[in-house]
Image (tube, rainbow, N blue to C red):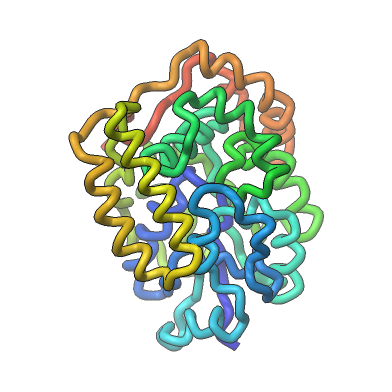
Length: 319
C-alpha cells in the first residue's frame, strides 16, 4: 500500500504550506501533489454538499481526494526508501479524521503547527476576503457570524475562531495517538529559527538533518480594499465560484486566476489588526491557550497579549 508515513495536520494559516514546501527538496522525503488531499476528512465518500454551503465551498470540494485508490496513487511516484507525506491542515481540527487516521495508519507521525489564534483567525479572514469569497467586510462581524455559518453548513475554512482551539484539538488527538508520534511547534519558531526547527522536524521523521534550511517567502495576498468596483468584482467571483460547483475544477481554476488578477491588482498592503479588535477575541481563546500550555509544557500565555505579532510579511526574521 502507498500510504503516508507522516502528515502535516495543522493548522490552517499557520505556515503548513511553507513547511510542506521546505521539506519537498529533502531527498529522503516525498510529499504529495496536491498538497492538501483532505482524504481523512471524507471517510471514503464524496464531500457532503450539506457541509459545503459557503461561497466557493462546493467547487473546492470537487478537488478533495476522497477515494482511497486515488489517494494511494498520489504516493505511487515516491522513490523507493523515501518517507511519504501530505499536508492537510484541517486534520488537527477534525476529530473524526483523528480516528480515521489511526484506523488506517496507526504508526504515522504527525506535525502540527500552531499560531497565535487571533492572528490566525485574522489571516484566515484576510485570505477569503482577498479571494473575493468573504462577503463580510468587517473581520469581527465575520467572527460573530461564525455560529450561524456553521449551522448553515459552511466548510471548515470559515471557522475563523473554532479552528484556533488547538488545546481542545490536541487533547482529543492525544487520546488516540501516543504523544511521541506528534510534533507540535509554534509558527513563531518556524519563522524566527527556521534552520533549527527544520532540523528538529527531520530528526523527528528519522531522516538526515542539515539538508533543508529555509522556507519559501511569504504567501501573502495583495489586500483588496472595499470599493464599489471591488464589490462588483467580488460578486462576480462568488457567482463564478457557484458555477464552479458544476464544472471540472481545472476549468474554474483557470477562470479564477483571471478574476483574482483583476480583483487583487494595486499591491495594497493589508491593514493591521488593531489592539481593540484583538482584545475582543482574547477571552474566547484564554482557557484553550491554558489547556495547550498544560498539554505541551510550552508557555502560550503570550498569546493573551493585547498586541499580536502580525503576519509573516510584518515580521523581521532573525538571520
